[in-house]
Length: 227
Image (cartoon, rainbow, N blue to C red; front, side):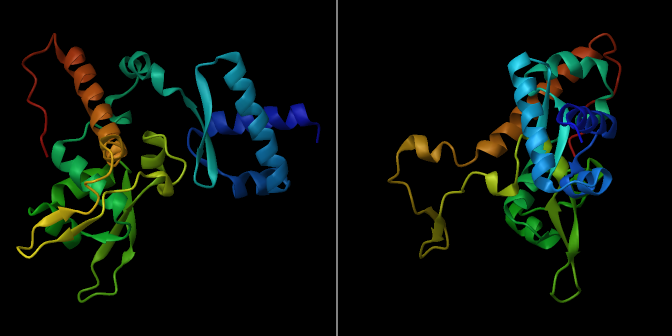
């Protein structure tokens, strides 16, 4: 197939899908090998970058999605449904961070780390498709486990869960208190440890501000759900 036509077809598929399209799906549809598809997408990515367009092709695990650039979020948000970008409470942010760093975590694991019940937050994250069920754990009662989704990776600009920054190493002292093992490292190193969590908070703050602006003419509406 002619290269320019192939790029046009892939671009049309990504635009129409409105979600992450797996490489294997493109291979099956176009009857081409992965190298040909990845090469064509790489050229498309370069063309989008050089043209300075408002769209970009985002790699998410073993797939791609055509998406608007993050820097234009504040202009796009007022034009779309509020449900498209979830507004997360502090509790939901904590649960999301725990599951992101603890793949196949159970509700009990999350509750133990937070010290409170997390049922409502887990339900909300499932509703927003930021986490998903990951099968039952081989533990008494066979509790359900959870992991983050491709939607989570896309929302926070990650290609893979492996791109999460490292957390600081810790140990328990004689009083069973957490002690960070790497305090002697430079301050700038430790500041990067929770980069993704900070980005989650930043996105949430922007959404709250935009939502408040949208609701300003109608102060009689109910207060924000803090679940």
